[in-house]
Length: 141
Image (cartoon, helix red, strand yellow):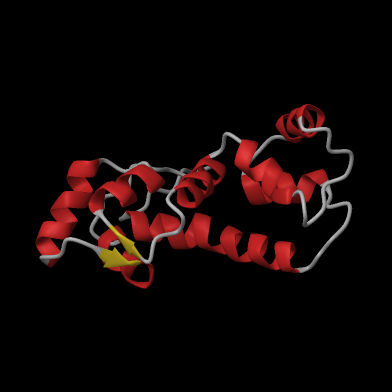
């Protein structure tokens, strides 16, 4: 299988993160009961074994919309840790360079360069694309 490299973090984000966030949002709003492990595995990039371990540790017998976040907040994948960090920061309306670097695990220097280029000190969540598009992406599919 050929590896895809991304031109920038924005390309990676819209291909790999954004669609999953939208699906997770729909799942949580759907008040579902007994969500299949395969679905959780795909959405959170976790192995079914890791999901089962979290379920066992947290005494979860059946994953529902109500306890899905427990799985997510205890998962070790990139999307899980990103969402956990976003929650820790209380989903700020305005992000500093340090916030973005921490939440998305991106080198702070790269984020500061993007902020300097745009001549800003903070950025709103709906404008993150302008930062992400300037960050070379090292992630591969």
